[in-house]
Length: 153
Image (cartoon, rainbow, N blue to C red):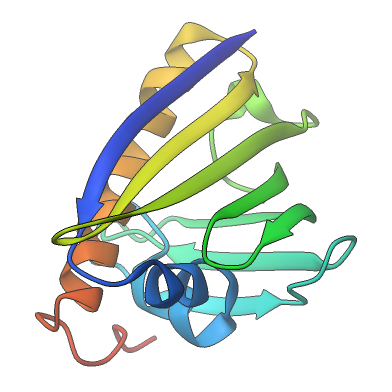
């Protein structure tokens, strides 16, 4: 099994970042690796609740992930299961991995420590590193006020 991690600094308070991570309205602004639109953003943000996100990449391919919220600590931590329902990395089909977002207040906003664990292969890990990196670029732009509305479907 493979795991990826990285740390990002986001120019917004932890409570604002937390809301963007778990709310359908927030997710619609940042999910996906490039500037393609989020087509579906559903989230029942409670332990045991489910999420589902479908997005279209700029190359026209569509991808959908879903999972369950495993842990929610307001403005501090989100843990969820992750599974590709459609598209995504071929090595991950039928596999359930684990995503952890840790939020810590810093002087310029929030330090986000991200881990995606239980990925099937190192190649899948690199693909997910690229995808999440692009998504977090969009999250930072959205929360810093550089992007006002989600991309149109």
